Length: 266
Image (cartoon, rainbow, N blue to C red; front, side, top):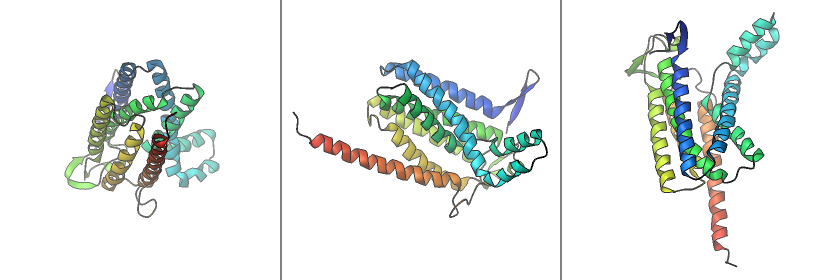
């Protein structure tokens, strides 16, 4: 695939272009939808900005955690430059779940600090914006040859991926499958948002559906991060935990709403 290309004498990453396109399109969507819903579009942009910072930090931190076995090498370096090089190798990549959790935490902190009213409405819009962005992100993964799939007769052969093990073998296009999955998820949530269904609950829906889908898509992944625990990958473990937490939250909210509906009117 096209991992990078030259533009005005500089090498440009295809993933970076795809991710940037995703950020712009998802941002424009969120801005316009927020305005249409009668919410504060500027506050929405600030929430997304803080969320993006959380995504950046969280994604790198979780990537570093998956490489925790190499942390010890940081304490056996001969120079500061060597320390920086090893640090970049350990924390240089991104893991989506780390970014997602970091983004949620950062957005929640902003909402708390800004005393954001109608937070559920903003979260509903974000529930559609996130998979829309992720669609472009996974297309970028396919172009760059990362997050590659298992060996398959019906697939694509990478030749220019920075990950050597991805090259020269026909691999299942799991990145495109996840891109399609995210786009369909975006359409479903957008339709619910447009019809006013499941108000203040759409982000829970996104987390639950994505976690289930990601759990099964992981079986089609062919990179080295498999078999972390009980034969499951890091992302599969996180998927199970997220699905369990969301399911419990939905039950608690359902019971709470049921009790409130039973209260006699004054």
